[in-house]
Image 1 (cartoon, rainbow over the protein chains, first blue to last red):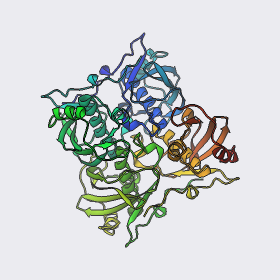
Image 2: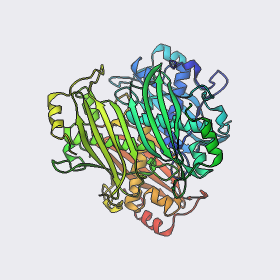
Image 3: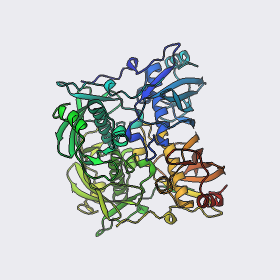
Image 4: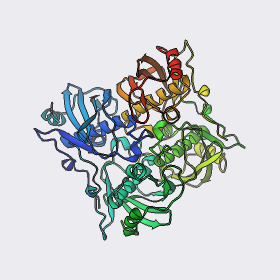
Amino acid sequence: MSKPIDPDAAPAGGGEAQPFIHPIRVRWADCDPALIAYTGQIPRFALEAIEAWWEHHVGLDWYALNLDRKIGTPFVHMTLDFRSPVTPRHMLECEVILARLGNSSIAHRVRGHQDGVLCFEGEFVSVFVDAGPRTPRRPPADILQRLLTHRGEG
Amino acid sequence: MSKPIDPDAAPAGGGEAQPFIHPIRVRWADCDPALIAYTGQIPRFALEAIEAWWEHHVGLDWYALNLDRKIGTPFVHMTLDFRSPVTPRHMLECEVILARLGNSSIAHRVRGHQDGVLCFEGEFVSVFVDAGPRTPRRPPADILQRLLTHRGEG
Amino acid sequence: MSKPIDPDAAPAGGGEAQPFIHPIRVRWADCDPALIAYTGQIPRFALEAIEAWWEHHVGLDWYALNLDRKIGTPFVHMTLDFRSPVTPRHMLECEVILARLGNSSIAHRVRGHQDGVLCFEGEFVSVFVDAGPRTPRRPPADILQRLLTHRGEG
Amino acid sequence: MSKPIDPDAAPAGGGEAQPFIHPIRVRWADCDPALIAYTGQIPRFALEAIEAWWEHHVGLDWYALNLDRKIGTPFVHMTLDFRSPVTPRHMLECEVILARLGNSSIAHRVRGHQDGVLCFEGEFVSVFVDAGPRTPRRPPADILQRLLTHRGEG
């Protein structure tokens, strides 16, 4: 009835030329009494989009990366500008770009659009660590190879 | 870039004979230190599946139902049995059935499977109210008609 | 600047005769466009109250119970009746009772009041497992002793 | 059994000389499989602390501000640096400072400590709007007065 998670069946694009877009269906549960998605929910949307990017481009979601490969990618920085309210009226299309790849850090830019309108944009910086002791490390060669392929792209 | 929410493009089935299945991608954010989806997240998964059922079968998500039609469907009862842990390893396929439709109440059954294994099952009862004063009411004729079509089905 | 978590400083009562009350400050973040706490948030309030009960009566929160004592208490059943909307207008006073203590299971009843009005009540059943393999087990003697003290009480 | 929300009973200080500290009890529900509070939860902790600051210094939580005074304070910017993991082992003491007060905007700085260690720090910028049409506005005189009192302080 259910299938294993297949990163190649990820919801959207991500080829060489086209940006990676992760669509999110905003729901009643996400909204507050101002009738828009609660501010505290927007970082979660962006993180979900970044995890979907990982799954699509690297073939590992954060659960597999941590449990199977023993690599963590804790965030050290996040900045967000909120441009326009997010509501359930339209799909939230989250564009994810690999902005920078350092020796032991990685930065993504995320821009969320609804109906062609930019709702938020932000940058999110993580570091690579060994999952147990949380010591900084370089990503292993196979993961690095897949990341390098998508530097500066969606 | 984005499209308006189109209930006919809902993610899964729901025809006369086949059950309505709402797939959920369980994520890192949903999991707790026991490496499984946090118990408090399971009711949210089930509610999301019920809202997707509404969107698919009635053509209204809860946001539109409340804001455009001024009808609320607050829950009065929820019961859940947790059969097997939910993890990000497989898609969570949530089957939703309209179990009962009363004069001013509605009950859904939800069963969540991962990889063919039943993870949870529950029943959720709502009442129809006018969105402002929260007085009980019958659903309007057009919504009732669409609900009646799916009584006892997915 | 900060202090270690001290269960003896738990927010409310729990002596022999008086019920255990865990107060929760309902916030904007908890509310949906119907101007009340989102239904999916209520089980989380109840679980928080049960964890506070553990901390107060047994001296272990779920984090310490799992990580330090290697004991998990996954939920197998939850039932909730929603009696009256929860809002940020009043404190949410959650009364927790240890309803039953079996060989390898434990059941709590939770009732949430605001301003003297019963908002929800529910029952929550967990089983004791070894945190790693998730095999059922009896609680260890010291924990059992502390649980037995509070059977049928708040 | 319950009492109305009384801002004067807010959890911590905020007098002229001392900073405003909002304590948060980090819970199992907040943590992810890396055994620390999920990154997406940290902005929510900070927002809760800012709302507690409003409640304490202005006498209005966001629910009352929006519903009773018809004033919204949507966020337009958020930046966060994550310095050290947040866990349930210690209370999370969130210090909130009113950093800037403009004609129709307000900026807070939040720093979260556990056991004397800085876990995160961030800045959060909101604008004042009329709650319905979301048009920018100055805060009303009584609210402005209370805000001015705490400019540059906790």
